[in-house]
Length: 79
Picture 1 (spheres, rainbow, N blue to C red):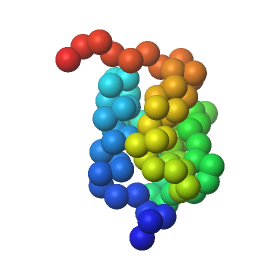
Picture 2: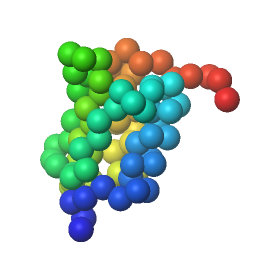
Picture 3: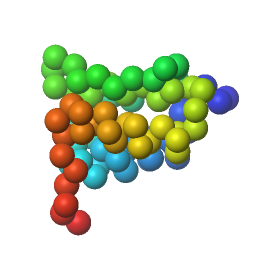
């Protein structure tokens, strides 16, 4: 089912959010892909993520990263 996120898709999202030091407990990822996709910082300080359906996750990840920066997140330099 192409409209459902796979474990690889979820890992790819977490790889980005982990790089920003975002606690996974504050992230809500919709399990179905929907266009146009979205990223929202909710009133309760949780991130709500919807992966788009019509483009590959690999093509979407750079814009996802840019949206996180736009929301004020800073990529961690710690390893």
